Length: 158
Image (cartoon, rainbow, N blue to C red; front, side, top):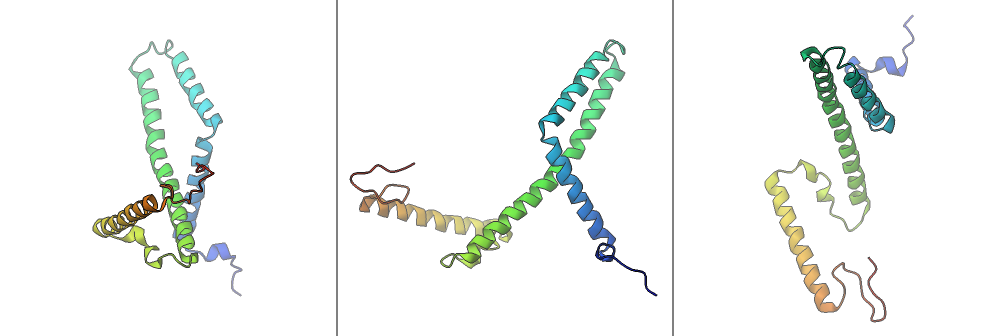
């Protein structure tokens, strides 16, 4: 008889570890942005300052806060970067879905973040030309620079 395997146990260890790390990173980044985390950091600094006279403001006293802050900073860099990468990828996927769902949009831009710098520069130059031409046309036709039609009796809405 085969052991009963839950769907979670079928996942490779690497996938489970990665998922666990991402949950941990998301939680730490979210909690570290909370005002209570700031209060805890301030409290730690106050305790460290109050301990100064006990250690006669010596090297050990300085080394404690220096080591503690360096370790926290070093680890937070990776956690924050992980959260930024995930957020950036999610935003990119949402934009890709909007491009795909818009009938007049160019689906060739769906994976634009994968293009080389030279290809991105060419596309950017093309869009800059289109924007410049649209501004010139709107200036000649009496509409405002934002591309909204202006009626004689109304002011543009900002």
